[in-house]
Length: 164
Image 1 (spheres, rainbow, N blue to C red):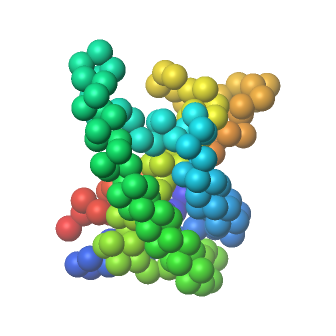
Image 2: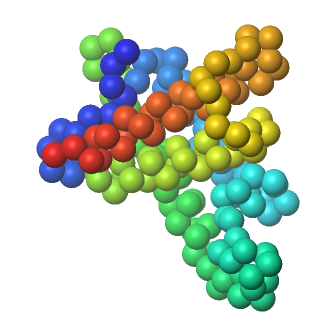
């Protein structure tokens, strides 16, 4: 399997996917936007965890949320916008589909991939580390495969960002 992300030089990266991977990835930013727009979505709590433990200082945590939630939400939306823009620039490159990314865009990808994984983990009720074995009879199997794939993408992106 080809590497999904690679460093091209200082502050430049290439994201490379199969057509099937690209089809899946193009749908995910919009799904994440829906989660961010719904304060009652259980995944939103996972994306915006408490700054203080509930038993430590509930008032300080509420102050933090009041002061920072909007800014954090804007940052997540901006990252989704960058990822969406890069997905619109993807072009065929041999047998794969690729796009060059700036460091800012690569970091946006990292944040969005992580947020999608966290959201998917909530949806699939994943509470423990998974061992890599997926029972094909598990109704969550397609989602778990996607969760592993997104983790694989994150791993390749972190390696590309760390290279050099």
